[in-house]
Amino acid sequence: MRPLYYYTLLVILSLVGLGASIYGLEAFLAQNPEACRTAKELVGQYGYLGIFGATIIAGTVIPFASPALVTFAASFALDPVLLIVVATVGNTIGVLINYYLARLLGMKYLEKRMSASTFSTFEGWWSQWGVLLLVVFGVVPLLPFDLLSLLCGLFKMRLHWFLLISFSTRVVQFGIFVLLGSLLVTGSCV
Image 1 (cartoon, rainbow, N blue to C red):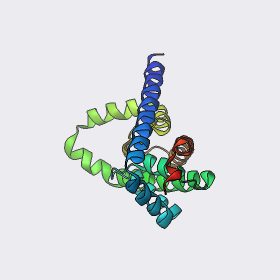
Image 2 (image 1 turned 135 degrees about the vertical axis):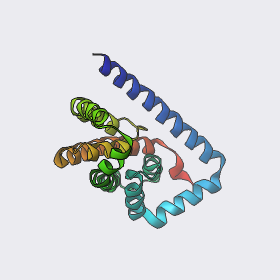
Image 3 (image 1 turned 90 degrees about the vertical axis):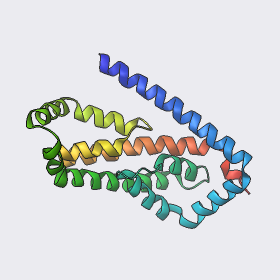
Image 4 (image 1 turned 60 degrees about the vertical axis):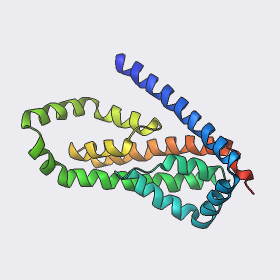
């Protein structure tokens, strides 16, 4: 029962952090109307294609704040369903790149840095907790899901499970970000 307590606490803290981030972004944009106008122009110019490309990049190990981008884009009244689909597909492609990189190159890297017994211990732990961890990291905002996708590839998680969990948790998470973005007042930027 203990892991459930920690996961619940992690979800609550992440949501509080996310709410504080959105409040801070809204306050910043309200005090900087030029930044707000520039952001609105970028969303208008690149639209869904820009979000798709950015979420692919964010799904890889390159740090990029796709949740903030999706939240911000939703605040400018883009179609919420299309925005969720575009962001989800893009991010899923990005984490799939991580998965295959780790699957193809991960063992060679680890063989030089970790003993076989240590790897076996991690592999046993992953087989017991990996799926639950992937679901939690997929749903909870601000957790490094993209880095966890490397472990999925390294420990050879079945691809269909990886894709199902990745896609479905991204739908939930980006749905939350789109909902929060619709609460921002940046749509009124001139």
